[in-house]
Image 1 (cartoon, rainbow, N blue to C red):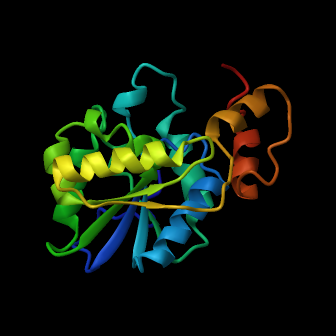
Image 2: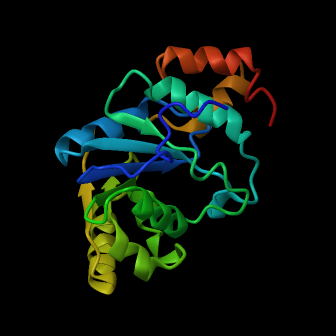
Length: 216
């Protein structure tokens, strides 16, 4: 597996970075648009994509081999000089808790680097269930991207509750409603439907070349 563009190499001298976590099974234009828009909005120096190893909320589900998810993410991000890719979670065979990942990143980057964890607003609404959430909210800031189908007033209420409960930095950002999901892409492949224009062409080619997602 290539180590190109991996963050585990030396102390990084950034002041403000974004972390884009997810299974990326597969990565698609929705992920890329969110990362780029938030990078610009918050003036982040880099956005680091971290494919999940064994995510706790999906440990009982079938997730595609990390090697494939890593290479698809590499193909999708390699043309953006502000995007990096890290193997920090997929090299760990244990369940990937965000708190452990952020603690490792704190050792990679300088102490005063601000870490912005980018995720969907639906995930933020479940932040209470994350491991060591009290400590986690003190180590990084959270940016919640809205997704189609979520009731804005409920998301806003939950964010207010979390901010008060954990003294956390959580902001919601409204982005163009790209109703693309990895689940939909996998279903389309199984049903023989087109996935063109839902994800970068090199990723589409990689999926077909490796016969991914044709079976449940």
